[in-house]
Image 1 (cartoon, rainbow, N blue to C red):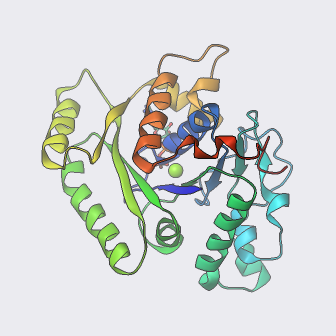
Image 2: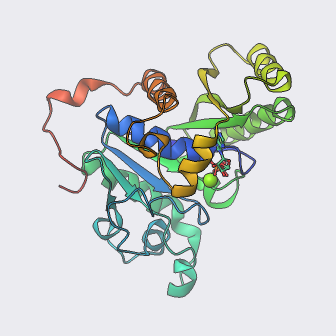
Image 3: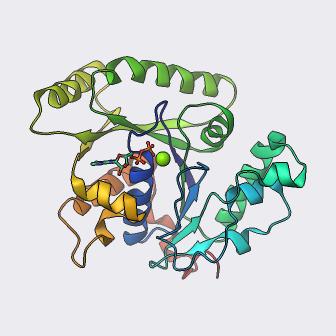
Length: 269
Ligand SMILES: Nc1ncnc2c1ncn2[C@@H]1O[C@H](COP(=O)(O)OP(=O)(O)O)[C@@H](O)[C@H]1O
Ligand SMILES: [Mg+2]
């Protein structure tokens, strides 16, 4: 099983959009995927899940005492399960600290693996501090969505330095790649940032694909669904995430080696 975080210094760069659409595409491609919302503000799962019967989620798990089976939600796809963020103040309510979050996250990943997950995708809150730092350090890979704007050229080296520090501190997390988001193909500035970044960084650091800025992403994220589920027939841009998922599989070595093993219909079976 492989754990992947989406992370960035800034908010509003498309992390949650990436997490939801990528998790959906990975699941569509047959990978048993657990999408975990570690951002108390993002609200993943409320629409994507078949039922949002519970207000509880990751933060309740971190606070202890709530079994994972009660927290993981089914989605419309059998391969896609969701662990919503839950109640941010669960630790405070139970009078426990976040200090053992690293052990609890390791527990979560072990449990997901035991339940047959191929991939755990963790959406994070902006910034590489606090719980996001813990989440990124617990993952095997991180994907960095980056808005195609001039500041990107300055912020990426800083992000890479922080990740290098995490590794120096003992984390095994590797960069799966930087993905340009909200690219405006009719705006020279957006295209020149994309070009500059591709020149500045090692050639394999950036995903060859990029996510265009389109109203459908805004609409889909307002509803909390992947763009593929926005209409009866998926719009063409849904294909981009199929391609990003295929590229990610290569980059992180998500292979079909398990295919001959016992099949699991869902993570909860
Ligand atoms: N490719 C895109 N095209 C248009 N709007 C987008 C795109 N990606 C994200 N957005 C919108 O930008 C806002 C921030 O995106 P979001 O994924 O929530 O970012 P983050 O999780 O990094 O804060 C949301 O309103 C979202 O709908
Ligand atoms: Mg978000």
